[in-house]
Image (cartoon, protein in one colour):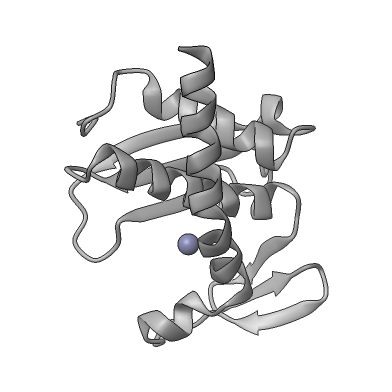
Length: 144
Ligand SMILES: [Zn+2]
């Protein structure tokens, strides 16, 4: 495991910060393992480690990114954790997801990046990632 430009504890601390912002009521009960790996296509990935629990997640970030970019990836994946942990997003089967407990959406397996990014769960994560990183960096400055 490589920590790519991070102090040893920073990925976990950043994830804690993001989750406390996103799901203050649930954050303490959510466990996230963060890994840095060489990834080809994606720069980040998030999955539920034990699907029934909605409390255990694994986040993988591409190694070698700048600290700022890595933080953005972690923030983005934390938005997905929020979506799963709250039940806003859930997998029905490998082809379909349930959004906001009401909308069944086909998982865009053959979509272009643009199409994929316009799914409601992606657009939400993209919309929030930068704000979360800025709040985190502000918080660091305050506590330094
Ligand atoms: Zn995403």
